[in-house]
Structures are given as structure tokens and as C-alpha cells.
Length: 226
Image 1: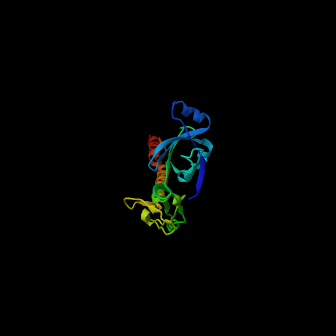
Image 2 (image 1 turned 90 degrees about the vertical axis):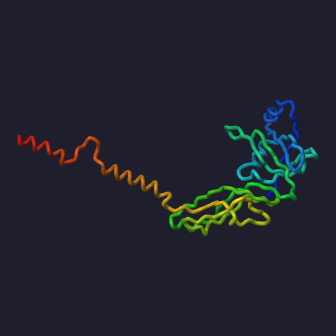
Image 3 (image 1 turned 180 degrees about the vertical axis):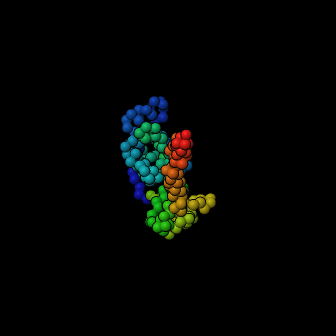
């Protein structure tokens, strides 16, 4: 896994109003915890932090740069973010310090590659999970895990135990749960068929207030006899 750098500095936690000042200066308040150390309050540049946690990079390994010897050189991953309801700006970040020589557990995104064999028969590829938990050393955290769906036919299911992982990366699971399947075409065609049948019945039914042709002709004959 690539390691990126991010500047940070210690911050005071009192008085409480200092947090708002940090945000007005374009920085984001946060804390660092883990690795048997006490939690430390920090402030990070907002723009750089946003770039580091964008999309799937939220578990990218980060090396801190700081004028404080206590913080400089620490390796961390993002564990939690607080964002504004509108705009999604980062309000607060929790960073977890890691030991490069000790394995840790993280969630990694799945990336489905290839064209499933069942698609030729009209099947539909249906991912059941978008990420899985793995255990590995911090420097071995994959950006994503490729899952080859090429062999899957209609009704086939691929389970987490069948995923091939590189190096010492190991999936973590209590039961062998499914992650992707190929659904039969009838699953998608059923709503369309029902809609077509409804339209056909509507076309065959007489318009409201219109009598059948034979019944409408009967009064005319009675009038002629009289």
C-alpha cells in the first residue's frame, strides 16, 4: 500500500471555543489514539485531509509530519469522520495509530472484474457485498480486492472463502457468506411481463359506458315492430 504524508500539529482542548477557531482557520480538529498510547488532540489542514480520505482512500496509510517529536513519523489510518449534513465538509476526524510490524483488521472494497458466463444467457450480475474485512500488516493493506466473476453461470454464487488474496492478506469472517451471484433473467423480466399483460387486458376491455354491439341493436328492432 502507498503511504502518503499529512501535516498535523497538537492543539489545545480548552477553552471549548478553540475548536471553532481551528475550523475558521481552514483546519480540522481531530484525535489520535491506539497503539497503547494516550489520545492526543490534533489539528490538520482541511484541504489536504479531504484529499487523503476521498473515495476508497479512507484506509490509505498516512505518515504524519509535525514539528512535535511526539507526532512526527507516526503512521495512522482514518477510523471515523464527522461531516456537515450539507456539503459534506469534514468537521472532525479520528485517526488510529498503527504499528507497522503488527497486523490489523480493516474493511477493503471489492472490485468485480470480468464478464460472468451467465450474462450470455440473460442473467444479471448481482453483488451481495461491496467490501470485506481483512487482516494484514499496515503496509500490505490493498486499495481494493479484485474478484473474478468470469466463471459464474446463472444461479452460481461466489463466497468469501473463494476470494484469492495476495501476500499475507487474510479474509476475516465467522461464516462463509456469499458476496456475488448471477440472477436468472426471469427476476428482471417478471415486472415487464406483468406490465405487458395489464396493458393487453386494458386494450381488450370495452370503454366505460359503451354497451356491446348486439345489446345496442336490440332496442332498434323492438321500435320497428311497433
